[in-house]
Image: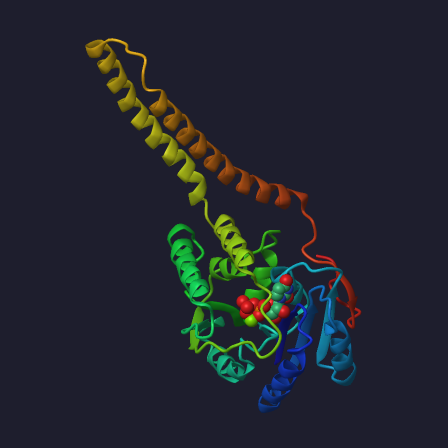
Length: 315
Ligand code: UDP
Ligand code: MG
């Protein structure tokens, strides 16, 4: 049996030696399995590619796939899935925040045949800024309420999957990818393995607060149509209010005559309605822009350099 490990790397020169050492250790504990490491270099600007080449030269399990530019972690994972040949496939971060030491346990659970994938979730968020944890928790609450992708709080992208599941993921050919949603959407029986948060071994996080916020909004837009219907509900609500307002204004006119006043309230109403309209147009614009990108059918990634001759280079 073969296990493919996909490791997206963006400026990870500091972390690579650690993860390689850890992988070597874990794979030697699992002698019955053949291993394949797919390091995807996501347009790093440091020595990541050079280190990967060195590792690949001395260890044939190490494969590298180097992107022509930074396409983002989602594309890196997708490239890994497209090129993985194992019976079991897992994605893990290069910074050891997804502990490879969990692998033997995960494989054991899959081997029993009761589950199709073993996913991991952090039960603690120690070492993470409080404000980030707060927003992350809120995000999971919101997206679970309004989308059909069921996502567990603290879920990581780190999961071991059977071949069938990987094929389903590749078949989800959408351009705007949100893996946590895709994993949930395709279904299959998933076992959730909890573990304590581990801090990054070396280097620094690639996610800024704004980057994460954008990721969260993208996730919601990709897996929920609720924001779109918000616009229509809001419209119905405001129309109802305006009927009441019309009755009020007409009755007042009939009883009190027509003194010219109400400029202030008029301005308030106009700006309020203007704001609501722009907000709703913004929501529609978000969906439209996603649709625009989907219809262009651009490739998800472009691999400019790899050690594998049979690689799926543009997909
Ligand atoms: N990553 C990537 N492309 C990017 C950003 C990140 O391939 O544009 C990789 C990164 O090298 C790491 C993983 O995605 O292996 C998770 O990134 P990071 O540890 O910075 O995120 P955090 O754990 O802080 O959420
Ligand atoms: Mg990390």
